[in-house]
Image (tube, rainbow, N blue to C red; front, side):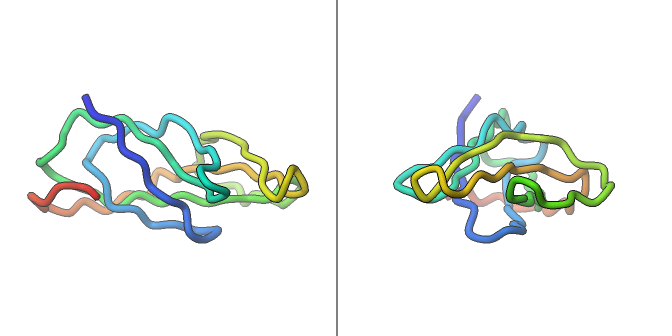
Length: 98
């Protein structure tokens, strides 16, 4: 098992990660939101996963989404949550994740 960290750069993020990775949490690190995932497959098949950040009070479309976590930024002036969708794109790559 390995734990990976992926920075979340925008409100909608497409992230290449090992297939079957399990999102664990989203938190701020050095003021930037990051996603941590658990993976059992380091060098095997990868997939593109989709993650969306919603600010508190924003309307969330009725999609097949899964809540990952809530974080606060800007000294607590901004609260947001991160969700993942079931939309995945498989890719066959042998390169390691960064």
